[in-house]
Length: 538
Image 1 (cartoon, rainbow, N blue to C red):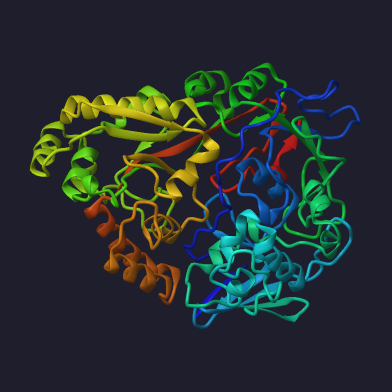
Image 2: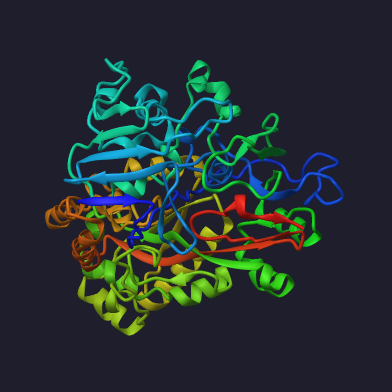
């Protein structure tokens, strides 16, 4: 029996998804905005640098910028504390006898910001709305393993679902939600920490578009005034909050910037109090400038180099391993990211249970001589080697240029061309398998489980066109394991297969660098949350 409740400190990691966000908006804020207002009888307020969110509907955004705001506005069922231990939040317990039918007990007495009670139905309604195909919300796919999901997402193009409720969600009573999955899934509890599983009040469904602009949550902060697009979002302490993390500050001002560089300039000038993503190129300066107020944090984000194995030129594992061994990961990290990122020899990030530092073995060790020998053994490569990446960030082209130089020098591939794709078209290019060469692939951890990486990127329907029945069978066995702990060895066996065949090369693990002003205290940033409720204003 798997039980997660407030009395048990199992070695299970739960996380909110950190996803790449939109980079829009304008720098600065309205006149009169101050970084940290407080003292002298004024409200205890601090400011947080942010890029423009795409949405504030929990079910319709995976943007890290949106999630930062949503974590202040909503309590999810389960969260991680800074030490990585699971804690119940809106839930009292999450239990299962067979990993397929789960019972979630909701803590009584919780309220939304409009006074509505938080109940099991609040979660069921939100999940059904997110899973309802015609809504076309970003987090729809998180609910694919709940019974009845297919009924809300008919395969026929343009077909309207016959129902708007998943049969696998049963509201037993106001404080009990029963969830039936299509198959056993030991990792299910850790998905509940993601903001996409947050509850919604009944008031939201009278006008969903309006709710997206002014969400009513159940967290320690409530929205204060309108979302001023490209300028600011302000939240205030919710007096009726009955959860476990009452806010220390009276208000938080999210100041929206066009770029991290501009935000960092404002942090240096004292015009913003907290910046969660200091640009890597400024990390060394920030560390000297901020001292103890410079906070490096581990990240679940990974960069990879993927191969179109559906192209016969890339079908030999020996060729793919040769390219891996010809890449000097440390040199690229030092040159492009000022050494802030960590070269990787694993397909999963260090935060993930079951992570093995040297899982890849020599195939991920820079060795030009062995790489060239293996390359020749594989028959080399003829024609133009196209390297694909998006134009979303200048660093992508910088490290692709470094990779190209190393492949030319170490393997003798003379004809290498870049295919820089507009960010809006990049993912569709990969999904439609239009690429004919290695490509930049990035994964932002949704929750710290090997399953989230391995099945999502190497499983059935992957972008590489790679197929391996043994791999897929091991993933299925791991998903159905008796516990999350028991699943880890099976996921590791699956990872070994993917590393042996190398349809995608691990490159480096991102490391985040945050910084804050001297106007605030008790700043406890971790990989899962900025913990804005704990921050105090001096």
